[in-house]
Length: 116
Image (cartoon, rainbow, N blue to C red; front, side, top):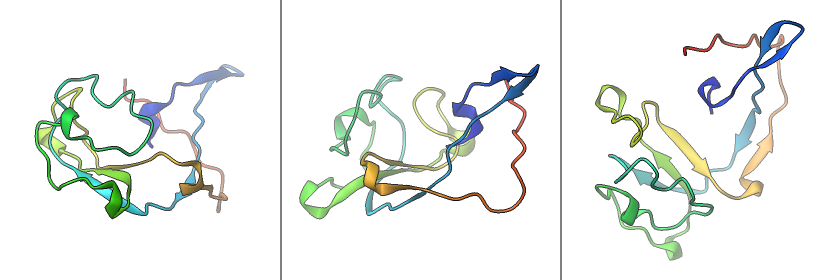
């Protein structure tokens, strides 16, 4: 995820942002394009299920037998509908064994400035 999803802590008078960087095993992601039916759709989803009732359009048929275990949400860029779609593409995984801690390489990262 990006810095847009974190809130700063004030430490020593400076804003500090914390991110967790992971390697992710996607498995077989289900493609989500378009918009959510409303801004609260899918916010309570805790496992990879058929999202059709939450979406304004379906790109492919969801079949748990076919092994869908994550979502690929296609970014809408300039066509984004605030609260119902995403600007940048993102993957969503639900099981802890799909995410693995990624060791940091190189110099310490500098926290980006928030845009808000």
